[in-house]
Length: 281
Image (cartoon, rainbow, N blue to C red; front, side):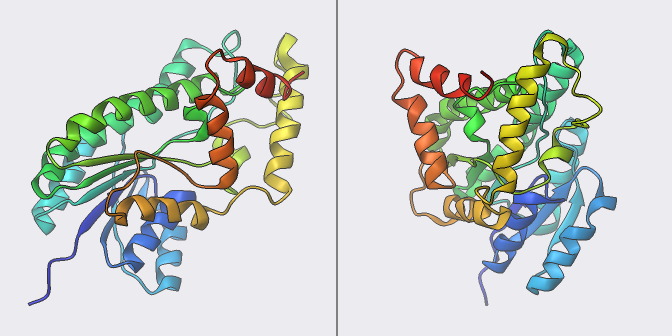
């Protein structure tokens, strides 16, 4: 009798890293539960699975809705009897600055990118403990270095990294491995994901000049070929799934390792301020 396949649940699989990770996990032999908030947006996911010749179990899961999270996790256990890994990938970008953002805007970013991760992780941990599973969260280099006009987004990613860094040694005492995966620029739909019409919404009052400089620099980074592909970033997720002793913090490119290293060696903050200040000066 063949061994029961290991089961992984991945959030935010409609596009980008989540889609690529779902296909890669299925190709590697995982029973893959690919979740997304709106299953009517699963067309690209289904096409990618068909092209790769793999099967995905596509289910609805809204990370901001505790009832939705509980139903999804309970459904996986009811159907398969096990949950061996979770990849927290669902998230939302946001471009703005404190004086112009509403508090509701900021809370919404935290709800998706921070509390959503905790909702899924909390529901999954009792099942991950059973078999010494893995809890993997896709964060960002923006979870280590704060970046101009990404204040709310980086705050949420900082919070995720701090929470997971604190949880990791506790979870390890019960056999659960905790890792964060930190991509840099990924060639996904940057403009669509930040929720801003760059031309229509560029009036940022006294911040307009700095915002234009930041956007020009960022768009160039996405257009000049330096951004990695989602499939490449998903390889780091696979590393966290398969390594015998996965690192807590995994960067997806050499550039990301160098960028994050700036912060980790910057005891007084001057190196980071000099780096990101040049983006808007």
